[in-house]
Length: 179
Length: 54
Image (cartoon, rainbow over all chains, first blue to last red):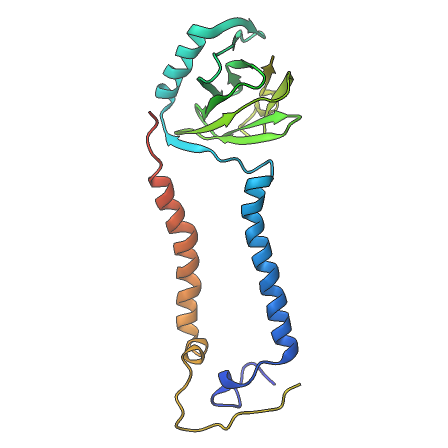
């Protein structure tokens, strides 16, 4: 049967569906629906799809809030870039920004305490990737993502930028301390 | 394999879905506009409605 010729039956739609084709359609549809609802499931039980709140912001607006936090809660500085290490009070809003090519500031959080972590980028897209626990969130200029975090394990975590951002991307690393 | 072919009545109305499947231009329109609305338009609308930071 050539697909180029018109169908031989005028009312071809009323031709009963073949058993094998019908079975195939049911199986394919069932699998499609399983995969669709898995997306909901992964959001609930998976550890990658975070529920972020998202807001529009500007670099200046975000920097003002970040600077306010840094001015109040800096405990020391680290690295040649003298990045402030900040220990904000539990339950507060904490701010972390990415810019070419560093994260600012360094956060020192407390175990089992909840914080609202605000993330943005100053210039281009950066990726916040906390390792080895593998939490990944995009830092997008002009927007801020807010994640509610409760660190449940003390330690010294690494942050790497996992969104290519130029010549210094491979050096864009930081720390996250949980006491 | 089923060999039943219903009687091809010349005056019977053509089922609606058959009319749809037989019209390549409606199918083209649906194939372009449904993804455009569901992916692009809805996505852009959602981004434009992101609230301002407090």
